[in-house]
Length: 351
Ligand SMILES: NC(=O)c1ccc[n+]([C@@H]2O[C@H](COP(=O)([O-])OP(=O)(O)OC[C@H]3O[C@@H](n4cnc5c(N)ncnc54)[C@H](O)[C@@H]3O)[C@@H](O)[C@H]2O)c1
Image (cartoon, rainbow, N blue to C red; front, side, top):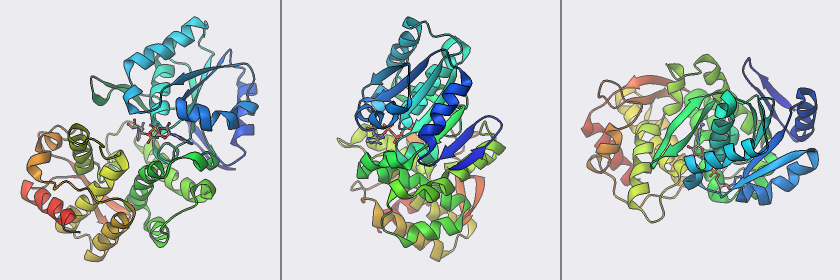
């Protein structure tokens, strides 16, 4: 079993995490155990976990981002309260990023905070959403607008759960795996680029390499004051495209698909502003073009302007970017002209 032990949280990865969970629950002597899951993880993942638990209560919510709401937070708090949960209760979050974000938020606020343990079941949650302590929900259609920072006590990762994860959700997580490589580990990027497809349910070492990058950055900058901005590579243009697609498209782009386009565009900006080599730009563009569908919409600065200007990463009215000096090395707090953003979108359109 691989592990990362930090002051605020511990990460364990491997098939043994289910036994590890039983051990933790016995040692901690929790007064009550709640398990939160969505309708899909209830069906696919709960049968794997349940034999390792005794005396628990399950809470199941419908699957999907549209349920990361105050309404479902109330539903969860009500379950705690109706079962007389005290501050020695624990919540196990069995699911993707939605369950980890919402469950963590409910646990961190119930009676001023009870312990929670993340058991991520999507690739995105394994390498990203379950780690870093950002918790919250979407409010009045604004993503993640209510929330707080609080780490789970443990993050227990068994890649075997990925066996049932749909291919498009694997691709969603792949964008973040690749982002970690691009900002911090050139050799990891080369490893990813060599293979068209990975057998993710047996790719514990690869998942571990990726999540270690996030865990290390989070340890150095828990509240996103500096270094953690490195994780935003691809996310300024990517988020704007994601928001645009959410309002305009019948079948909106998934987060990972939008971020993949954002990384191509921001690699282009990196080439122009920081001298990222032409070869690196070509490798990054090829990587995403070969694995992600091309967005049919012709993107332009004008279409994205409002979203870019409303980005929470901006400072003093300037659109803020994290760019690459080379693969594996970032530069934070970069700004650029509208014309260059437009040129980066045209670069993507012509690929
Ligand atoms: N807190 C953070 O730092 C952070 C970071 C990135 C993303 N996020 C949040 O994470 C969310 C996205 O996460 P996600 O992509 O995991 O979304 P998700 O939780 O909606 O999971 C995606 C889909 O996969 C299903 N699923 C999950 N595991 C499965 C399995 N093993 N087998 C079959 N189906 C399974 C889910 O039911 C869902 O339908 C967003 O709300 C985003 O804001 C948070």
